[in-house]
Length: 284
Length: 125
Length: 139
Image 1 (tube, chains in turn cyan, purple, red):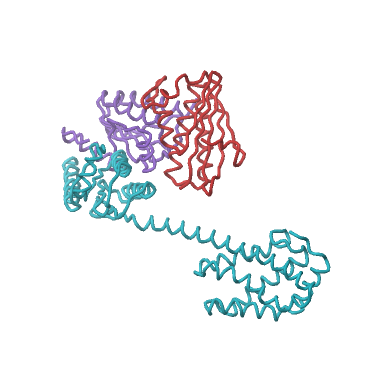
Image 2 (cartoon, rainbow over the protein chains, first blue to last red):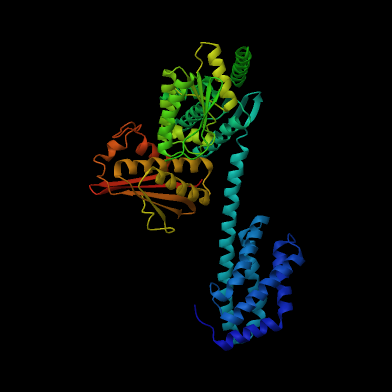
């Protein structure tokens, strides 16, 4: 990165300081136009005003390297701005333009003479660098949003419900992968403890395919429930899935399976009632 | 000297509630103490509450299985209660099936199960 | 498996010479797992694996050193644990990793079981000792 001569930077700082209000105003207008009023003028003015101030400070104290120490404040403001834009649903282009627009604003005022043009080019390079920074921050924020949504979706897609006194169930819908099955297992087993239920039913009517891995996970859930002192039944095995399981030679062991959810529930309720009966007899 | 796990007696049931992190020596002492107490008291049932354990490795798992077998030989049924979900999932992954060990969700259900086993000879484990 | 000992934060270490040290090692690993934000099930699996390997090291290797550290890789965070002993080594690693195979009075699930509980598992063994390395990644 070429180092600006002191006189160059000084001249730039003087110009930017002298015409601060005009430049910030124009900057906010340009950006506002592009965003088509989706951000209030006041908010934009405040945001860009702060940024302008920080850029000015950076120029005054440390030259033109956007990744340098002098621009730490600018970078943190830009990261904040990019995060907000990403959350509010603006595009990466719109976000980066918030920075690039300053070039358009400054160009006519700075490029009057040859020396000014050189200063402008150096400043433009700095702003390009800062623009790229917003793109990076934007992408990072979007990734965070996506991964947190994936997690929420995981939670949402596995509702463990109480079906009867002592019987809980979880209807599985969609493709099962390892991560999801793990969450289902944890939630189902925890619900057994929390609701003091002795029977669990996993209904896989809505699951399109069962491969070896999914079968393994289901099997492990059944075994874990048994170890805790509860019964776990798999219901809703469609004919195609039964065929697949047998064709694949998947070892389903002694996992209790029942074709329909209603039959599984009837069976579970009967067993719960039987235990309650036994308890009464045991007391006498 | 290491600590020993206390064994409580309620009627003809012995209750072992493990509340502290187990050292191997405590596990072995418990095995000795428990079989001695069964003989001394003529207990018909043992309930081992492991709800306080956040880790059950193969050593402790083996103790639970051995205890159940020894107790049965001495005329007492053992019920292991309160196994945490994460522990159960870990044991399954570890490949430990605790065969021959009866379990119940919690202490209350464990005691009920013992009563049920005493009432009817039908083996429902 | 990658050599995580060289990367990441400096490990915390603990020497294991008796069975109460195994409990300490378990606590060390648990603390790290909690700090790393591993889910409860992942924590439990890791701590159980550490317990198996720590006891193995004590029984077969005459004790040794446990080192544990938080590791980062491509946006994931996890816990790395290393068990190093100066024992006689394992003659046949493949055999030792088989379910049910046991040289002592255990259930023969120590090594093979621990391997199933973690995401990465590495073992080196020679006449002057055995080193087992494991990693459990956060979800």
